[in-house]
Structure formats: C-alpha cells, structure tokens
Image 1: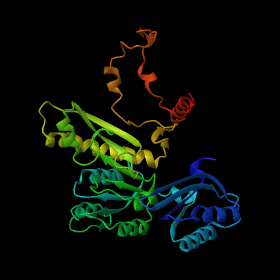
Image 2: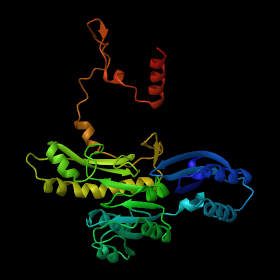
Image 3: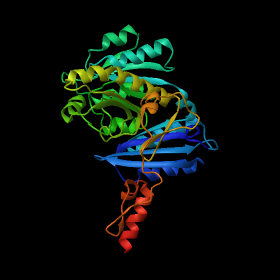
Image 4: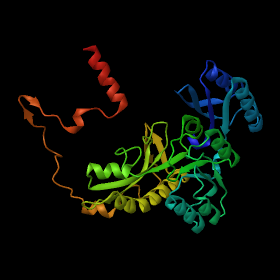
Length: 344
C-alpha cells in the first residue's frame, strides 16, 4: 500500500511519558495497523507522525477522529488526522513579508490555470502585500507585530481556519518554529536565494557577493526545524558578472526565485517527488519538470577527459584513494564501517 493510500496521524505537544502508548493502544483497539512511525523532540516539544492503514478498522472515520481528538485532550496534545480523501484537496496558504515577486507569480499561475490549486489565504507578518492579495481576491491576514514577529498560535489558527494542505513561504522573512513545522511537516515549501547548501541564512546574495562566486542561484526546499537544511526540490543558477553589486545579484535572482518556487509547488501537488533519507527523489513516471538548469546546458558541458576506466595508481606502495573511496555516502555502509573499525 502506498503512502498516499494511508491515513496520516500527527501528534504535537509538550514531551511527556505515555504519549506513544496512548495513541498506539487506541489504534490497536480499533484494528488499525501502523505502517510507519516517526518521532522527534525539540526544545521540549514532542512530535509523532504516523501513517496507518484504516481500511479494515472497526470504527467510522468520524468516530476515529473524535476518539483521537478526545485522547489528545486527555494527554494535553494536539492530534490531527488526515484520511486519504482529506489529502486530495489542494488548498494553499502563502506566507509573505514585503517582497511581492513570488506571490505575484503564484497568483498569475493560478489565474492562467498553470497552477491547479486554490490559493486560500495570504498571511503577512507585515501588511505591505495586502493590495496584491486583494487584487486577486484572496483573503489577507496580517499576523505580526510592528517588528514583524508573528504570533505562531494566531498563525496556526489562520491555517486551521482555511484548512490548508500546503504552506508556501514566498520570501517570508521569519523562521518558523517547531510548533508550526511539526504540524505541517513535509507540507511547507520555502524559496532561498542561494544554491543551498551554500550561503544559508540571511543576506544570501551578499554572502555570495562577498565570497566572490561566479555562479549564484536559488533553491526551493521543504522546511524542517534546521534552518535552510530541508530536502531540496529544485534549483536555478545564473552567472555573476565581474564586480557585480549585491543589487545586481538580486535583480537576476528574483525572477528565478519565483520560477523555482512555482515549480516546487507543482511538483508537490502532483506528488512527483518523494523524500528519502533527507533528499528528494523524482518518481519514475514523472517528466516535464526542469528541476535544475535547462537540458541545453548538458550539450555545452564537456564529457571528457575523465578518470573512468583507469586503474588506481599506486603511490609509495599504497593504492591512491579516489573521491569515492574517501567516505561512504550510504548511512548503513558508514555504520558498518564504524562497527568494523571498533572491532579492530
């Protein structure tokens, strides 16, 4: 059974004993099989995400939802249930600050039919982009103080009010805390103005300029509790002219920010990508997406010379290491090597 056919249960609240047992015991009593379970704790906040098979359960969906909600009240945690049919909806919340280009691109795509989803609400930590939302008849909520710091409980209330399926950070200049990320894990997409993992954090274009890079770029990625380290969905790059100012990098990068964010949203909505071991993978049946640079670049990229087919050279009686020999990239292989070394 694929994950899209399973029911998703998310539990978020203060870390305490008995949380896992309470939920799993209820599921067992209802004849529900747990296919996958993942847990995390950060800053005292507990998160558990489960994918379960409810096809043969001895309860209705409404009854199970009510029982889990009641259990959550008893355990003082938030329990959310998304049955397969619930995940067929396509409601998007767009979070913004003051830069309009990404929001405008999403709105244009919705208007011309290239984005098959509902832009349900725009939430700004400043009110500057209210006119853009109103131009496209999208509700706008200002959630932020004079300095732009949002009340995350209020933000969660807005997201729940519109029952959104996907949260898109369209140059939203605030870091979302675990209280939000845990509840929408795997359903928050951000665009960052650099070729991650290079230049994370604030002022990425300035970081690139000061590093003297000749190629810069932008990245759309899923949001995790680790800043700018979530699984990468798509990227774009551009040349940096000699002596270019930061403003020139920004001018070249902003159209690509809007483009790559839209593509990442479309990939997510089409279920074209999966996340495995912290990285995204394209489903085999998916095509038509760019993901990186245009395919024309491949024809301009030299294909020789390479070291393929050459025997390893010996130096001082030892076989020279290749890049592939330096460090195992597979976590399981790395673990096996570590255990072998410990036994020696």
